[in-house]
Image (cartoon, rainbow, N blue to C red; front, side, top):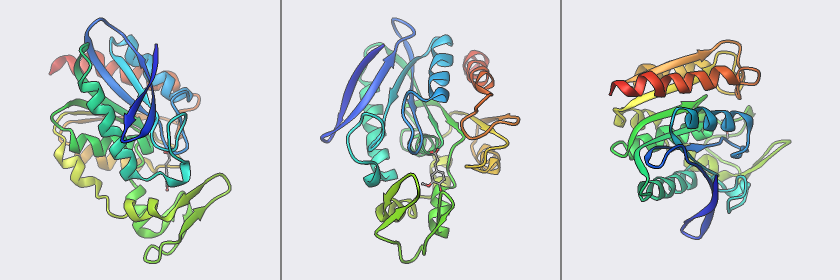
Length: 248
Ligand code: FER
């Protein structure tokens, strides 16, 4: 494992690279809202990909883990800018052939957005429990179950465990994920627990229907982070890379 920082216009993005081969494919892997790269479901995804012969570049986004920026100041726009820097870094690595991107929850939404922006760079994307209702919720005046007036966005949003700037909402309200979905023509693997209390499973079904080449693997009885179902998450990923990707 190599540990380093990727510079994104002065913001240091903490990264870890786990190589699977001398030369070969690489998957970028991103955590969710309040998450980081050492969470059980992130490590499970990393190990499954390594076992499938794919190197993994985990990176932490603005305001998360050991990366720069404060949590309260993060926005999806900042994460998009960060992720583009990570894609650019990965494209510059000599040992990388095909490039993939995977992310959990808000990182899954990010993966869908970057899929639309880097459609020619990414051979496949793997949104895990992707939180792509965030922009819809922001327009409706809901953030993680907390209500606000969507036409008069407060200066800050506060819950028991986090505080966010109103800019998080202002930017999220302008994002229309369907546009990103329609731009990505490669293979998509969506893995989602059908008892996820954070992101409705129906969003996974909707995304799978909208992508031109998507597989949806439901994990029965699993919650948002696949607690107690990590083996099934690993198997879904290994199966996708083992059989699915060889057919391209
Ligand atoms: C929300 C629902 C889910 C939200 C964020 C999430 C900020 C993200 C969850 C995650 O990444 O685990 O309303 O608003």
